[in-house]
Length: 71
Image (cartoon, rainbow, N blue to C red; front, side):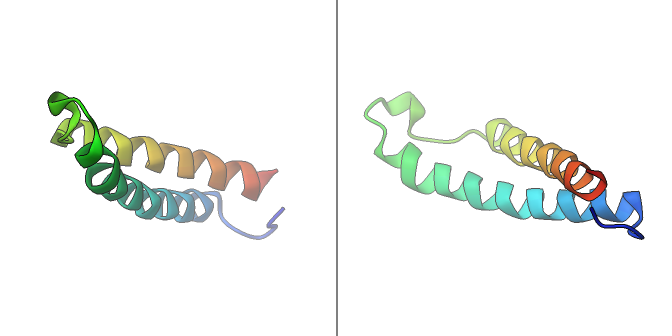
């Protein structure tokens, strides 16, 4: 789809967009969803869970960058 672009550049752009989106989703989850949850144990977002959200978004961004770029 994007001829002439290097595969690693497509993966990097996807990872960057995934990282940025992961930060936004993690902050939204922590500030909007978790604080309004009726059960007290779910009113905070633990750091490992937040880190896993960001990591999953980065992996998804790499996958989508490669799929769109090479597809």
